Image (cartoon, rainbow, N blue to C red; front, top):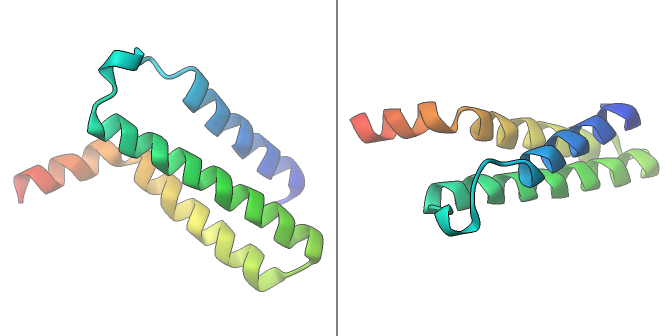
Length: 87
């Protein structure tokens, strides 16, 4: 990812955290876990940005793959939960 893409990903996560349609009292354990994924994704983006500045390709690639895995889990949460419930 380039710097512009990293900034766009930060913005998407920020929107998810700020514009989520949940009241504070309705945070279920699932919602909390999903929000934890978003916070961890922010850490990965930050580490990716630092690695890019240091020109550390190995760390940058690792953080990018970790970020993609986290966001895949986030976006497929409902599907994963249904599969777990059926098992």
